[in-house]
Length: 358
Ligand SMILES: NC(=O)c1ccc[n+]([C@@H]2O[C@H](COP(=O)([O-])OP(=O)(O)OC[C@H]3O[C@@H](n4cnc5c(N)ncnc54)[C@H](OP(=O)(O)O)[C@@H]3O)[C@@H](O)[C@H]2O)c1
Image 1 (cartoon, rainbow, N blue to C red):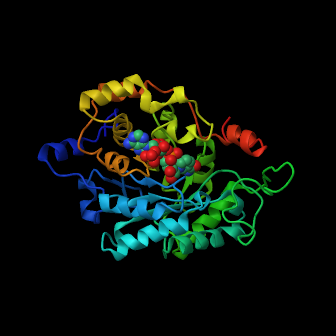
Image 2 (image 1 turned 135 degrees about the vertical axis):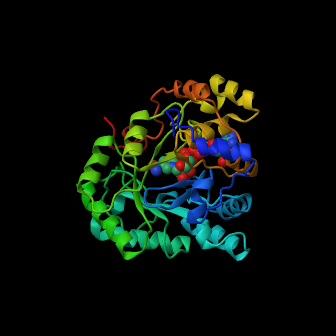
């Protein structure tokens, strides 16, 4: 792979007219499929995946079923999204309809902040497995480097951020749990066969270096906010040097955050004139250019959509390519704009200052 992140193999595939696919492949096919990214442990992660945050429970079974019918094979889930049971219903229906088998799918989920104490990690994972209707996850991530006081399942699930939402002035209740102890419990899940591999989200390079220095099982992936307004080139370079796959969340930028009051309408990547210019040259949408840029940087984007046309559009990113010059022009849009920052939203929405970035 060159400096631009351009994968020369893809040129060969384009020129030979091999149709791209998002379906997982057998080991021998992995290197031939631009829709599958090979990870350090030899597993093949379908790319792009489908994000499931904020898809409400009533529609998510249908969205998941449609996505599988269109060709998605990778689903990004989390306890905190409050819809794992319904995502599981969609997966099950697609399998019953013969659209795919369990082996075709890549399912990621995430450990929530209230389960960081090692004694709670296994039960949290088992609850996610039960809700999704699976025996094993393909990837389990620690959602945030933030440990909050335990909330029992029967009290509230998912527990979300506030310790006692009914309190007069509700706040979070941070607790002191060394991240490496949580990581040790994640390793146990992999040893026990509940999850195929483990990974992290939202870390700084320093904390990731600590994990690598103390772990027995390395994180195979790091999921971070990545889009042209937050390119995180140092983090990406560090992860690539350490052979840690990078999953790009919120790959379409501000749009996910507008309704939450965490972004302004004049910050929309999808309305960026440079992006629009590149999109026009290729006869593609800005969203497709953003996702293609993500793939050509070697990352795995996981755009969320609940619209059939967007689902279709977001999958069609392996049959065109951005030039080195276009990649550089998009790289230069970096504004270091992080929309998903607990140091900001924690205080505004949950009355608690929990910064994780300096
Ligand atoms: N690890 C973490 O801490 C973390 C944090 C945030 C997100 N995530 C994961 O990353 C996933 C993706 O991030 P995200 O949901 O924040 O944002 P996103 O995928 O960047 O953007 C989603 C927004 O873009 C719209 N959209 C999707 N495709 C489009 C297209 N082709 N054209 C125009 N608009 C389009 C969606 O609307 P429609 O639904 O109407 O298409 C939605 O409003 C999440 O769902 C979640 O799984 C992880």
